Length: 402
Image (cartoon, rainbow, N blue to C red):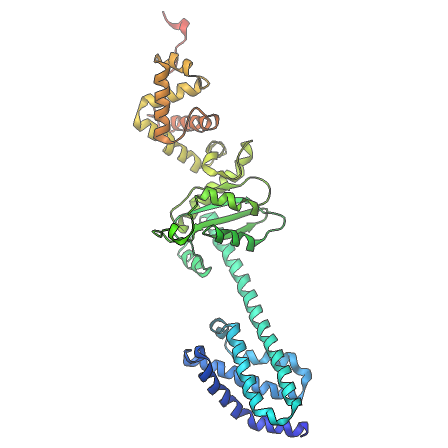
């Protein structure tokens, strides 16, 4: 049979082929029957367009790229989000099976043309979904950057939770922010794989040479982590595992906050710590932002000043004036127990006891050089703040006694 007669026969048969294809879809594909009527109609339009497109292509094979691409133009864009690539290929297979059954007596050349065309359609379908995925990936990246920027600037609004949900955030409960440098070759997928292994979710923000990770626990509150076969790590340990994902330089971990909407507080502390981390010559990597409170306070960070006063000076002042006085004297005397005891007219063991009480009340140990700096900064800020603050007694010179 010549080509013209075959084309005429295919055009007459196109309606029956479309009907038989839709019937086969209902019989063999459960997901098709479960779809709403509007989407089933859209899938049917794609099948009919595929049959009509094959007839046009059979008449002029040089039109393969444009004709194959036109098949998916008849479907609404929402169909890409409701029908997966696998389901689309199943649709192509059912349509090809129906056509092969009907054209089996028309010669091998028609069947070969149908197989060749179905291959082109499959590649076109893969291209359509790949471009959709790429577009969605770019949109997600822009949205993620917007969310991270909102967290860093503290400009949160009512839309932030919905934007976070659109990103597929799986974090529950506590959150903290990790700030470091961007490596020369940054692998986003590696960061996400590492985070999944650690049982956390991350939001990633790249701001030039600065890399910001917003880290949240993926384990819902109240869930037994041991029952899931995972161990819930502290955020410091999580930061240590994520450390290789950053470039050289300092790496600062902000304080833990109860929820993602509160992450701005952790971000502000982490950014302030990152800006002054070089002032601590032997700062560990990663270092907690609260360990950089003196440097942050000297740089004018109001959050650091408030933290030092509220977490160190005020608890000591409220607990006992003797603790504040002893701590002042101990730090002013070069952390010497004997010199402090002589100034306060007490036994050195009394000084030891009071310093132990200081550590019990606020959690910092004045006998260490780094923590002594933190405590002395807190005392200075607390003393110059409130007018009624307890100050260290001024030592009278010996020659002034008469």
